Length: 170
Image (spheres, rainbow, N blue to C red):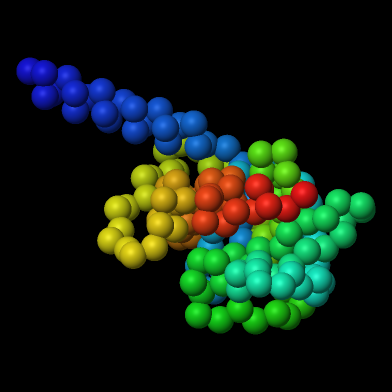
């Protein structure tokens, strides 16, 4: 009987976690995939401009830009998440994010739109065997008609210890 109770409690916790993720998502493309991030993290969307490179920075950190007096690190999510190609063209944009009180830019192939996702449209991210820890930043899979969105915890990704962004940039 206790196992049934524990199973029910786990299912309820999972349902509560998914309901907490219901809301508005900014959708964007990385390679052939469409992703979604919490719209409340988005400060603005800007066209891509070549940032000032920082010596010895990891390849996904493209450099920094001066955004109205604020020095903003620019992370190419395509490189960070292992996309095979990162082509810069007129669709390439920077999503300026507010993450834990800091401003950071994320380069993506293109921005699609803003979608409202109810809890019933979101499924848990499937467990994936991978050498990388990037799967930890996937919070679920959203479905809107035939579209599937990979929902990402952008705050967790940008503030992860291996990124070191929010501690090193002042």
